[in-house]
Image 1: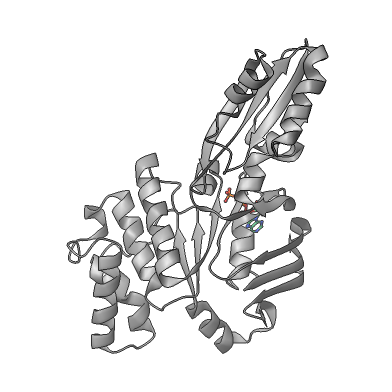
Image 2: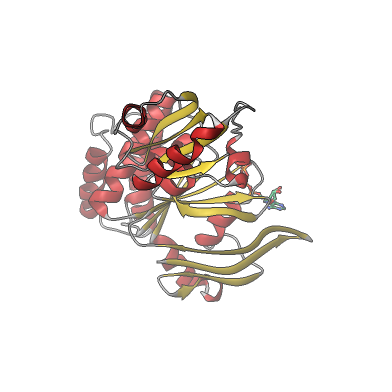
Length: 318
Ligand SMILES: Nc1ncnc2c1ncn2[C@@H]1O[C@H](COP(=O)(O)OP(=O)(O)OP(=O)(O)O)[C@@H](O)[C@H]1O
């Protein structure tokens, strides 16, 4: 649905996006991740035509954004909803009026607006706050209003620019759950920009990692976290401290294996003790995945690695 090929973007002489090529599929929840200044928001703004790109191609539904004329661009943007970190609500308008705004601007009839706004306020769980003003709402509620407003014109894509960055962890989770529900119920593609790895883990099916405008990772979320390469480890700030004696073996547990007590079983079957030096289990995109480092004596390396090989486990010697 969104195809980006060899996209470059400069601000003056500074290159802020370098040779970006990605594909975002219809119905996907896709995360663009990176530290501050990586170029995330710039890429998001290129996707909705707010920002021009220097060269390369960016197509949404097979339409090249840069060749859209003014009126077509307006029509195109109608199909793209957007939410922001600081909600961007109109303070002097009520919740109902805020959500109704895009439809009023596009000249919809009062009855159509009323039906849609009520429907969306129910979806985001705010039908009892219609007449409240933004300053009477919590951060999470404000973001719910913004989400409802972003959905009024029935977009195919919802872009989220750090939409949970100003929220506490519990509220973040409730907003992410709402986004998941919207993705499933309305089949809307969601592209979210974030610097928070927890957000990526909780919601994204696929992720793009950006650093200084370059792609340093692009894969299914589980793959990125399950077996991070050196760049990803650096990005996550993870460094494993392992013993210098013996052999350190890192085992990766894919989703189907995570619950199995593989280590205990191996210890029992090989009649051997292992030193577990490092381990982590986490929930990524509703699956439990993890990795663990065990330390063994040099002379036991062969028997242990043979056992692991027979059990379809991803592993490496550190
Ligand atoms: N309008 C602009 N004019 C000139 N340079 C810009 C402009 N907007 C962004 N930049 C620069 O482009 C680079 C990428 O910025 P961008 O806002 O896309 O990064 P980001 O990853 O979204 O960061 P943050 O999370 O801090 O918003 C930065 O070096 C920034 O200073």
